[in-house]
Image (cartoon, rainbow, N blue to C red):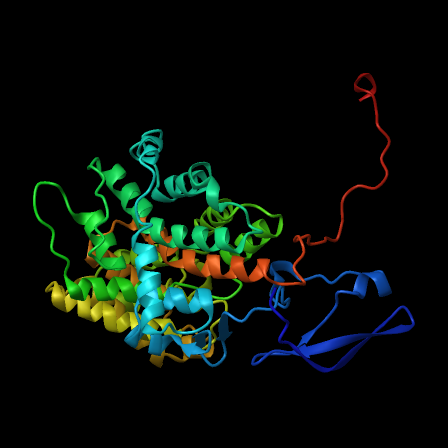
Length: 435
């Protein structure tokens, strides 16, 4: 069990029903202070009402910090810009799981463990054949990830630290294999087994795009871009899917079931489908000369049009992930000779207008990561149906780190939100013959 690191920061007084109630205020290492209302119901016989939990800290966490007003995102205290430029996805995985950047020997051991867990049980190949060929990859991922618990009984005891670690490594290692299998199945192509001499992202690219008929060579520029995408999506504090994983885990569910729950939540278009929506918007606009007219319609509330890929529920400034993603988007398009791609030209013009136009500045509609990631993934050869599956692949390590942290929290309880009941009151049952 880990020790709490929150510090006392005074008291807050609630005046209700002619009485005053004191509640402790705590401070973390950075960010807003919080009022501890755990005793509110016992003392004052009232609940708080916070739809979407936008003003509620559901847990104490030392993994990811976001300051939306300043455009800050940090993993374990390291800025996302530094990690995107200097780190690798596997090193970032180690950081999220264990709290510090690894020493050389630690990284070698971790890499060896992940690499040796990339194979999946051969019977899972039969499992895939139960899906229709046109099944959405996220539908397949929900099913096969949840099914892992039926194949790996030796790592489902959440009370055993060793089993938790084995399950964590297995999930990080097998997600690329499963995602590649989902892609291959939809394409009617044979599954490609992982190769231990390849790196994490290089292995995934080979499993996804190689065919038995010819040798596949990994392009390092494309591998770097995809690895960066994985880093940028690895964790994002207590978002909807992460909260889902924690809520499922709070019941004592096995880790494979918890991650499957996270995938199901991520599938929602309001969460994991934003980059696909941004790409569709750029394709709808089509050419640069049509950008002004589209922007004009966006400003007209009666049009119902939204500028996809701009603004963020948390960030009220430029999404710090978007800057790193922009660099990789240009690198990929340059490498593939697509820098004159009409979609990129539309994207650049939209960004220019959004950063200069008073309408967008006032509403703080800055480009977010989805704005460029959709273009990049399309250039890499992924169909839009795979975008959210790639998001799930990257976010798995964040979900696991959060799940692991929750289980080690001495204050952890099964999640049980309350409600304001507004339904009928005390109705008498009427027999069918009298209705």
